[in-house]
Length: 264
Image (cartoon, rainbow, N blue to C red; front, side):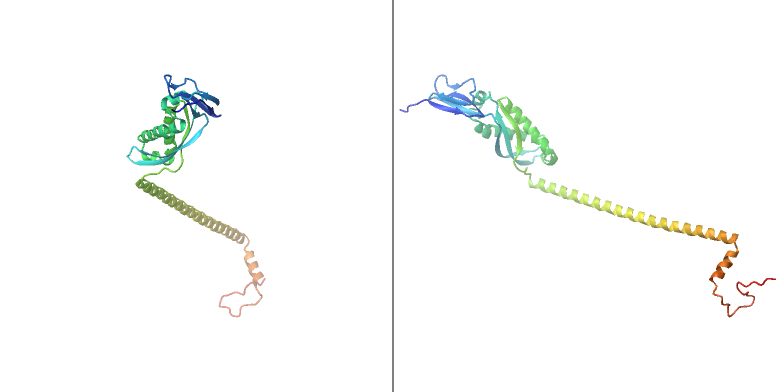
């Protein structure tokens, strides 16, 4: 016959425990949680512990289906902890410790919520810009579900990339490539326009310079012409200044000798 003896159990800091009577007429869970410390237990008693500090759990890959019938996979993790007074209700509800609750119950709830939220949206809402809102919706639902049991869900997060069906991935890649090509064409057009504008401005500048020179030359000629009309001797004086003093060898009939005038 197996002899049962009493023993001592310890609840470490950062945990809350619940004393459970495993045998007898008063079999069940005590109404109150037990805090950190050492406890003497009868042979038929056991303490189940729950962490009151945040722990991270890797739940593996969760597969869910979107509104448009496409299957999506995502590696998921969750951060959570138990409220200090929640140990009795946690054990009464789940009949297991925190690790088992997360691996079995929490994982199932999270998978269900992923499918529920995904059924409301199309695949493009769980990828790219819509991903954060989608995950927030799942996290809120999971948090509300476990709050009634005293489990606080800090965050629900991805531990890797979302995996889409190959056809969706190919379509997204094609869309990205098309967008990049469109942006490249837009940049090339903008560059061509800028170069054309630059050439027009340069041509305009050159034309303005030519016009300015022509106006200046015309004004100069007008000034010179007006001066000559008012001072006819200036032309003759300029010619004399440039004459080398040699008379022409051949002179046609009626041609006068240059610059020589004979007074009376």
